[in-house]
Structure formats: structure tokens, C-alpha cells
Length: 348
Image (cartoon, rainbow, N blue to C red; front, side):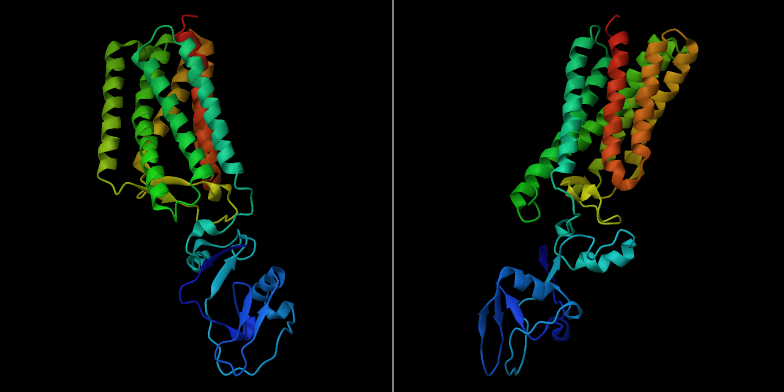
């Protein structure tokens, strides 16, 4: 089991018996007789972690004047032992405080599953940006935004993946902590800047597909200006914030797969940061529906609807699932826009 020292933890001789176990040795302090017994690892863990109600140890008997703990350690194997999935956050807080790092509480799952999922997302997005290179024959500001956002999502998923593979010890390694933190800053900046700009892509595709109000050059220019303004405003807001920090899933369900991810998040999460992503997803969906009704190019319309639904559904799922479904939804959105781009920017 994973263990962490509990500060000023109480000592319960009636629960654990009149012995102190330290480094596989049984020690009696201030006794008329001092005994040292070499105890096997299995016996040590069993005697230390099992309540007296479930076993009857008869290891030693000696006159004892005073017993004092050398070190009290709280051992947690999996959330199934102490942290139950039906616990409220308030009920779990005292247990979480009993360990130095909440990330040390195992969720009972293989540590490689979560980062492998993000590695697969990264691979899928690399495929998409590779295909975009060949699909875009007539480059525009919208096609550039599409490529930029795809590249930003590659970085986003890549950093989460390698962080979870190679930076597991950042809570005890300040150098690794700083490295991963600086690698994480572009995650948020590229994403925040690129997402509003991709609305330009949606506008250009809508114009190609025959959506009436998007035929106006004034509307197209207005969308460009608005997208740039939102991107700048978002980064100004972030510059005034406390920045980013390591985030740990520390609420029910405690068996969440997200607990195996080593990543950074906003110190002060704000709904304003996700508004551009919501607008982009809705824009894809609504412009796609309008294009389908226009009937000029139903194929483009269908892929835009697919893109919008992928992003909306992926980001609408519950918290501990959303970490994975949200990024999957973004990859699905980029794939839908790739297929639309083959027609719009490829001259097909």
C-alpha cells in the first residue's frame, strides 16, 4: 500500500497493541526489558494495518513502563479501503488531509491507462493535421485557424500524456514540477487563442455551403474582428490571474481514472474560459444546420453538424468522465472539419 506520514497523528495502543513497528523491527521504548525481533514483511503489514478485532496477535510479552510512538504512519491502499465512492466531499476531507499528497491515494487502476488514452488522442490529431496539409489547396485565414487549433490540441494532449508517464514525482521533485509547469503554459495559451479564431473557419465554410447571412463580406470581417478580440481578452484575463497549478481529482468518485493524470489547471477556474469553446461548438452545429437547409453543399453541412455535436456531447458529460470525453469530442470536431475542409479548401 501507499503510505504517507500523518502530522501529529494520535497513537492508539488499544487498537494496535503495545508495540511500535519501524523498518520491520518491533521496538519497546523505556522498558525494563528491551526486545528486538526481526519480523517478516507480511507479518509486519498485517500486524500494523489490521484492527485487533480481526486477528489475535500473541507475538511478545514483556513488562512495559511507557510506550511512545517513534513514528505514526497512515497507510492507504485503495479508495475501496477508506475512501468510498458514495462519500461526500465533506466526509472525505479528513481522510485526504491524513496524507501528504492526495495523489498518493491509489484509485485501484493501472497507472498507464489514463496517459495511454491521451497518447491515442495525440496520435489521432497528428493524423488529422497531416491530412490537413494535403487537403488545403487554397489557404485562407480560416484554414490557418483550423491547422493552428489542431496543432494546439496536439500539444494539449501530448503534455498531459507525457506528464502522466514521466512526471509522476513532481510533488517531491521541484525541478520536474517547474519543467512540466512551463510546458503546460502553451497548452492554455494556444487553446485559448485558437478556439475563437476557428470561428473564422466555420464562417468561411458556411459561406461556401450557401448560408445566406455569411455571404456578406462585412459579416465575415466582423467575425474576424470579434474572434481576435475574444482571444486577446481571454489572455489579458489570464495574465491578471494567479496562473496555473497542479490539479488532482480530490472528490467523489475516488476511483476516477483522472486520478492517474499528472497535469496543470487554472488556480482560479472561471466559466469565462470555456465560453469560446461553447460558442465554437454551437457555431459548427447551427451553421451546419443552416447549410443543410440551404442545400448548396449537404456534404459540408453534415460534417459541420458532426463536428458541432462531437464537441457538445463530449464536453457535456459528467466531471470525472469529462476529462477524457471532452478531449475526445475536440478530436471528433477537428476530424469533422477536416472532412469539410477537403471540400471547402481542396477545390473538390
